[in-house]
Image (cartoon, rainbow, N blue to C red; front, side, top):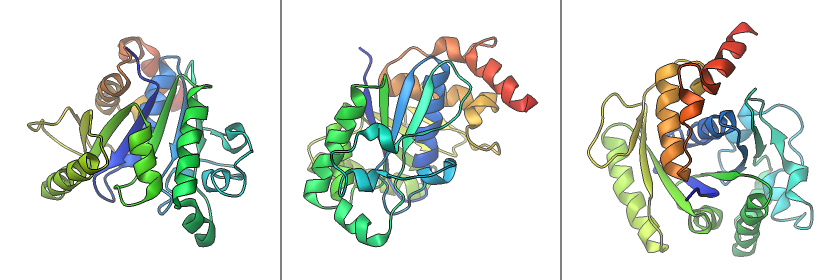
Length: 245
């Protein structure tokens, strides 16, 4: 069974959740999927930093002032060169609207936006901060799959234990556990993403990193992306095209 919706939840700030979410989306697009990435990390608004152009309406606007506006109006294409596509809906808002976007009513609208995206895309990935707000909880409980993202080291391990407790408190759990910027496998961890010096999307230019992201994508949504990471597959071809630019 292939899953459509997945939340990537950071165990702590600085875990690399936004980038990991985007890298997974690029791998899936390289395999031919059309992917939507929604931003539940309202406070940091990191997804917008990977995009160019006008970010209006942003996601907070679509769950507060413009609930009747189609999600498509807020989507910004992230160019990958793959057979599929990645469309992002970032948060880019002043504090006043951020506060209103965190209400229970707006969180319900956020969950409805996930469902709306699921009708138009092969996969929907949600970038979720540590569970401390209504939209974060709505994303974690409203998606079919949950990926727990933690940094390597003691800080990540401590934060992972806390996040697992919070996930249980809201009636869900982690289906996949990924550690970022790690060097070796750890007990209980499904995928370790190595550090990389390449800019995003590094999965297209850093072979070791790309294969790890592909493993994570396959586990998270249970989609066979093997053709995308073969030596003569899509990732290799797209990466070569990017290097020539």
